[in-house]
Amino acid sequence: MPFTLPNLPYPFNALEPHIDARTMEIHHGKHHNAYVTNLNNAIAGTDAEKLTIEEICKNISKYPVAVRNNGGGHYNHSLFWTIMGPNAGGTPAGALADAINAAFGSFDEFKNKFSAAAAGRFGSGWAWLIVDAGKKLQITSTPNQDNPLMDVAEVKGTPILGLDVWEHAYYLHYQNRRPDYIAAWWNVVNWNEVAKRFAQTQ
Ligand code: MN
Image (cartoon, rainbow, N blue to C red; front, side, top):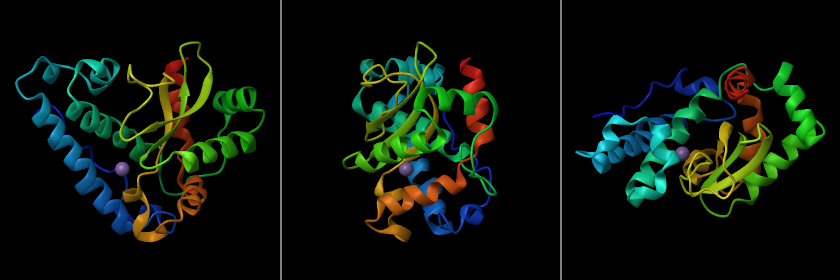
């Protein structure tokens, strides 16, 4: 089995009160785990078993829909766990802060635009901060488990921050109140990890 469920880098309750322990437990142990299992099943015996998840995403149009859905699910959640953390939130610093200010005017402007992209994604999907081919920051969103690495994405680039707005990410605690979940989520963003991912694109 080429792909495995990564460990959550903190305890299930580490993001409380913003994201509750039970949601984290089900989200990581059931949802993400199922994406990994189904991805492995979907590529069993094919050349894709030798590829990285990034390589698969970049050529996703060549694969069956099960690879798109579950491969996207695996990539997206693997990123999601790392860009959150306990004692996080606040604002970014250094080169990332400069790039956000340059692209969006200010951190608050960025936050508003990103929140609007997350709130406005109809149904299930993700909001993203990406670095595009011209090395510029952009906000975008994708349906289902698609992501901006995919050759089918409307706006392509390397994700450095992603927000899961599937109901499974927030329904137990927030029910239909997606905007409340989004507002709370800013308190758990691990800007050090986002800055690290940003630096890798420069
Ligand atoms: Mn999810």
